[in-house]
Length: 144
Image 1 (cartoon, rainbow, N blue to C red):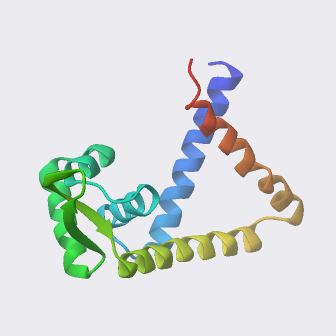
Image 2: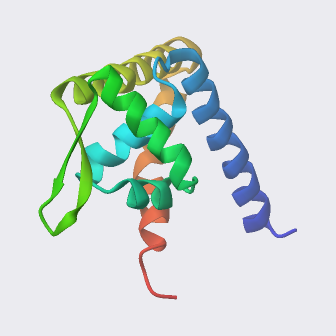
């Protein structure tokens, strides 16, 4: 294993562990609900089929999640302006507020963990990480 392979594996494991731990500590929304609301918030209204594809779940599972979102008042269905036969799902203000509460809880938990666990020097080092991770993410968008 090369140095880059080892580093990539350590990053994959560490980032995955941090994400899972943060969700366990702070998430109030069930994962299917949070994932769907996140997609609707970031990318706008979408059909059930499109949401299922982007979440990599079966249409039937996504349909159940959308029904749950509607019951909670977090999403609404309306006619698709591009297809008279279709319907799209949109996040409601209540859904956006629930998603914001969930995101805030994760941020607050992580901020507290940083403040109480890391030294000031480690916090400074950690402050460099988001820009580096953003550059790695941007690498996926470039043609290979």
